[in-house]
Length: 143
Image (cartoon, rainbow, N blue to C red; front, side, top):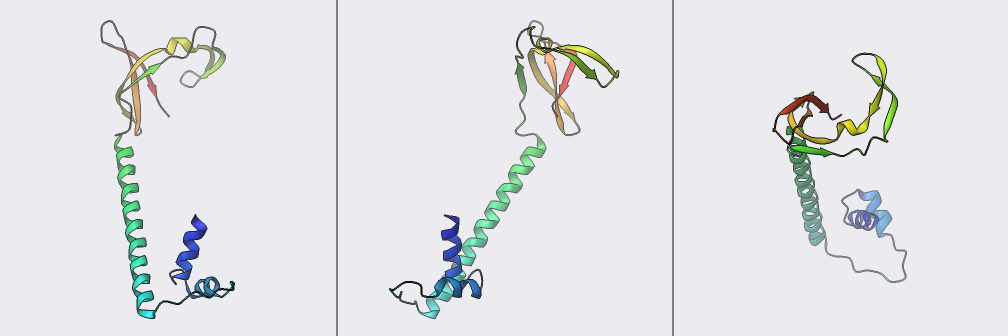
């Protein structure tokens, strides 16, 4: 599909004269009728306008989605974590804050986490108690 579009744009003299000459040289037994110059000029200008308008609309959409992502519009307000039972254990986990190796049991992190601010433009999630609706001091930073 992309090759058909580029071939058609080359025929309309949008991508340069060398490509127009390459795409319009007769390679078939049947000759195609050539449109008058005024019609070709109008179509070329119209096609360039449509191409630029599509580019501007696409660029505006990319900027809008990027700004929504940066502002945190797409971030989850809460997470439910279920990492399995006590069988999943990482025995030699390196803890950065203390600099030592400890056993890490994944099931200890099961629970519901709510968004509690950001750190370096990343969301910080804090575990929520279901019984009393209080926050535990443990938090997760998603990197």
